[in-house]
Image (tube, rainbow, N blue to C red; front, top):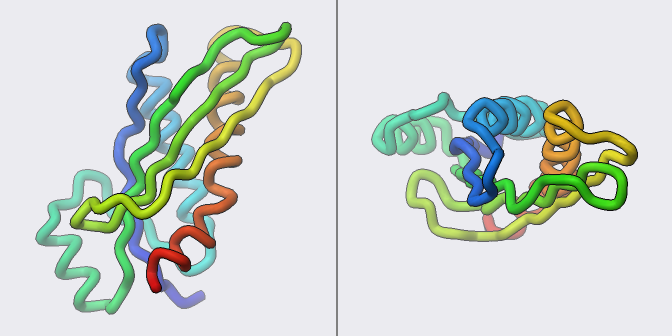
Length: 140
């Protein structure tokens, strides 16, 4: 389809102990896959320079956004594993905040690294549900 949005994706962060770099890298890869499947979206190359982003945006007349994700919490809750995330929608390359999308998910009856990954991915999926509307609204 027609590409309208050019979206950069940062490495997710966290202040929660026990969430390792590999988990955050997997979360970034998940974001890239999910966002890349959305209509009208092209994902920018990782670590692209602001100058390169500006050139692409001008040449192709696209609207640029940048996603900063954070794992707010992840861990055992009620016999399962629960994750809460936030995804901040910024302009790209300027990084002016436009929207904060939040998501949460629970993997019932499971714990450990696999359950944490599933909970984080479910929470990210929940946060991304409103991304198309947020991008369209902040374009105006």
